[in-house]
Length: 534
Image 1 (cartoon, rainbow, N blue to C red):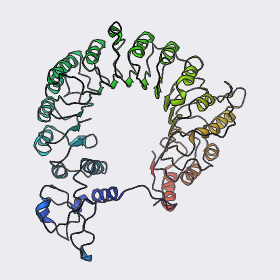
Image 2 (cartoon, rainbow, N blue to C red):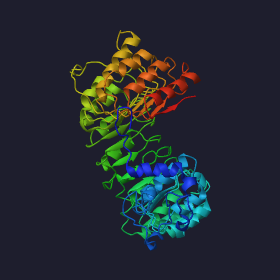
Image 3 (spheres, rainbow, N blue to C red):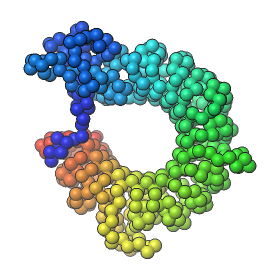
Image 4 (tube, rainbow, N blue to C red):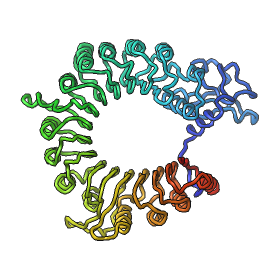
């Protein structure tokens, strides 16, 4: 319960998992035969053997008593719930975050009925030995993530691909030493049912590996219709390699090649064929694309609804005109595209797609008009305006800014941004714009980023939070806001009952004593919030 008596939203299963994680060393038992009242409260697998113990009345619920005796009422068996992949994953992640995870825990938690496992959080434990154990401990796995598992070698990944030929999802992100071109050939030969392949940060992958993967996959799976998502962020792939991907996987729906600077115009060779692609999500950020290549993309991919061309230095307002020719755009990101202007490029885009737009990233753009976004994007959920200069609220385009209509924004990022309102005082402009920003929030805002915003003071924060439209706020970031004090932070805790994390790192006027006082105040009002400070 929080201080207002509202439930924090934890299910009985989540509560049990947290209790288990907190007391894992006290209650952990290596086998069910060691279960006694003195040394154990929970049984944590292996679960295959539980059926033969007839005295255990196992039911598909979280808590199950051994019998009706009051003395045994606190003994619980996490059985049918713990056996599923989601619960096992949650417990592994909890133990990792609490720095309590041990090898012996994994030996029991990795059971034969697991269908999915993600080693991103406990990546420090993962090595070739554990990969080998997965082969015989978890034969039903169809989803595996080895993201950030840098200790795993190429040999182990090849063995994994050969052992799990029914694999549908594989994430090898940042396994840069292990994930090489020859590994992709092995994956293509053995994993014919693969739907999603994530290779972000695998910087040793080249066109050769991608071509081999496509050819091997095509031989193993002749219809070539299964792969739906491919992510090659920060690899060495070029236009030639990406063309092979597009030719092989014509029904690919999600493609990301962010950071591949040699990608310029991979779709140009398909223009004469006039064959359409099924891409709906395309991330070309930090690549070498230009206005012409975007024209080719929109011609061949009419179903695009999520487009990211952030930090592409060669795109201009002409690109926006091209994008206006397709329908259904719901997410659009052009952060750092300095040749695109708000008035010439963005305003026409908002008139064409604003009504259905849910995510808009304009980071690095100058002279953004809040009133236009508010008026033209009624369904907006995510608005990112990081490092934007001279954000204003100009009642132009026939917009009545005095309407009481609110949007239902869930995430707002104003990091390192400044405000401008004609001849008005800078502080007055900032205050006026922030008051107007409340019209974006409604009562749905969950994430608010104000780090490095100039002129953020106690009075401005209090004025901004003085209404009941921040009851849903769970994360607030105020890094490098040097004018705020502990007084406004207490006001934040009072006005944001759902706040789970408050980031006040590098705020000069917040001392060690202030930080401790703020934590004490949070405890006093029964506010379970994590405060980040240094």
